Length: 236
Ligand SMILES: [Mg+2]
Image (cartoon, rainbow, N blue to C red; front, side, top):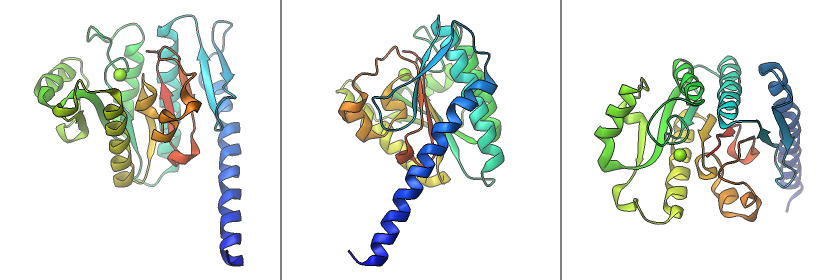
C-alpha cells in the first residue's frame, strides 16, 4: 500500500474511533437530561458489543416504551437542529412498536405514537412493516383510525410472496429498505422497532454479537457502521 493510502486509512480509522468515543459519551448524557432516573429505571452498558449499546431496565414494558419514546424524540429534535434542511429521515416499525397485538395504542404505545407524530413534523418519516403488501388498504385504514397518518409512498410493506417464509426474508427486506431510504435522504436519524432486524445492521443481526439480545429486551445503540443512526428497540 502506498504511503498516501496508508495515511488515508489511518485517518479513517482515527475518525471512526473518535466518532465512537463521541457517541459513547453522548448517549448517557442524553439520557440523564431527558428522563427522570428513578430506582426503578436503570441503564446498563452492554459490553458484549463493540459499539455503544445500552440495555434499558424498568419495572414495566409501559415504562420502557415511555423511555424509548421520550429519548428518541430528544435525539430527533437535536438532529433537526444539527442537520441541513431536507436531509435525514426517521423509520418506524408498526406492530409492537406503535401499536400492540390487538391493534390498540395503550400501555406505553401512546408515547411511541407521540414520537412518531412529532418526528413527522421535523423529518420525512417512513413506516416499514413485515405485513404483506396485499393488505395495504387495510393497514392504511387502520393507521388512519389510530391517527397515525402516513402518505402511501412512505409505507413500505413486505412483498406478499415473501410473507410466511422464514425471517431471513424479513431481515433482508428491512435492511434493503433502510439502505434505500438512507441513500435518498443522506442518512437515517433514528430507527424504532421491537425486533433487532428493525433497527440493526444486517451483519450484526446475522452475527453472534446479537444472539444474547432477547426479543423482550429494551435497548438503544449507536452502531457507527450505520452512519449516525441511533437504533431504538422497544420491548417485544
Ligand atoms: Mg414489530
